[in-house]
Length: 246
Image (tube, rainbow, N blue to C red; front, side, top):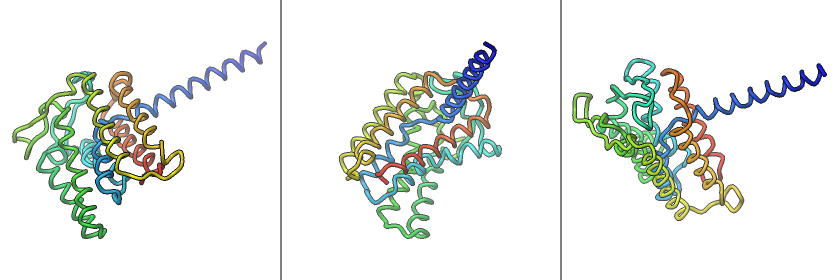
């Protein structure tokens, strides 16, 4: 009897550990998945472009932003339910999310690809556009906090984040529009992953978007938010490179 109780206790402890681990992994995925639509679209435009690098490029300014917040260069506040779709207030981030800054970061990527890495002009332009696309996707969903130039300049944002259902619909629509163009203009490897990997991956991202918007709680602090954001970007980039579409 005692042995059976011990077994039951261990079972529930293991179940709790597995549940907590799964929940922790899900908490890593904090992103606007619509940003990946331009990566898929641009891969369809230029098949020689690396889809893995495009996944990095479309999120590059966010990859900079979160460490900048921890270093005090840019600022945000954790505010649960600041909008129905987000749990943070963006205070100061002209170096990563200003339109001028986004143009300069896109130009920097172009020059690095063209001059230092030696990629073709077309490939370099594609990667630069991928970086710049982040600002225009943010324009759709952000509240008016995206500066055109410096922090004191005009700030824009169409505010779709103020409606979580509309946010989800827009994210899904952008993602699957990019996926449609991608599938139409690329030639997958003739195996299961080659044929269906990117479709399953897109569905996976859509599930994450749903959880992010409607299920997962607000991050506990800025460090947790940074870890979740950078963790999600890394995991999605590594995952997309595991498909046969690179």
